[in-house]
Length: 349
Ligand code: TXA
Ligand code: MG
Image 1 (cartoon, rainbow, N blue to C red):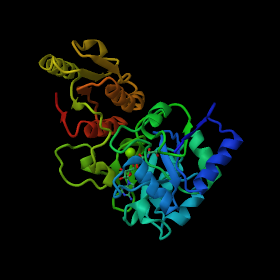
Image 2: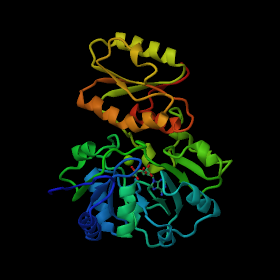
Image 3: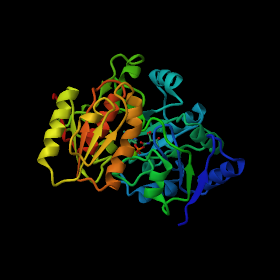
């Protein structure tokens, strides 16, 4: 199929384009649009056939459920059985924004969306283009990240095009996504509520509302072999073609360890994912990527997936990544590195 590209200037869609996007969703077509986290591959969440096509376009396992995106809180009523009080509190503080809530599903929602679960994931994105589209379309839009399943999520139009050109009807080019890692997923159907995927809204933020909040240990502990509560977390994810290793602990020790490993693998093409603070400390790597300063982890998060894809572009064999403390958005970054490394994280350096 020929993919239509809609370019957006200054975060404001032309009236004609907005009309075309609305029509496309109503006709069961696939539309990629930017959100504040990563680009999403959207379809009408109430149209089972359209949702099935999302799985085909991405090559996504069918037991990995989709997030429904809404533009107005009033849409929730039809989609869920009930909204607990804590949900209302979270909505008032974090929506629109990078927080996805798992709630008891209503009967109207298809098993294709929920992967057969009796719960549904819902979020209200804050990106101005996403908001404009969702408010105009007025349908819940099912949208996973706009990548081929297993690849790093796309944070720019260029990366969307790489994965999905010819596989979707429309791609909306809205520039860079600013968080760079996906929304935090929180399950409100269990007591206490549990974080299933760390992301843009941090554990520390959520603790202010839910002091006893739980975290699914598999999101960060590579030794925990239990099955993740969020189906998507069990798959190898965010995976560059290269073998990836992550090192956490004292920064000086991390640099030493990575330099040692570079020296031991002279015949391999090696990339280091570094930070501004340590950038000059590496010797002999083929590529050293600066993810940004450790003082600004949001910047680091926003550069992470692009860095992994850059390593693919350069045919890197091994990636050595610096780790981060599990504080703030650092937990989300480490979760993505854990998946990219298939659990090969060395802690405690
Ligand atoms: O930031 C984001 O959330 C992006 C943008 C596009 O909104 N979307 C995104 O979607 O990351 P996706 O499909 O790549 O990830 C959704 C995650 C998966 O890990 C999935 O298993 C989980 O949410 N999920 C969806 N429904 C669920 C449910 N009912 N129970 C538990 N986990 C669920
Ligand atoms: Mg994804």
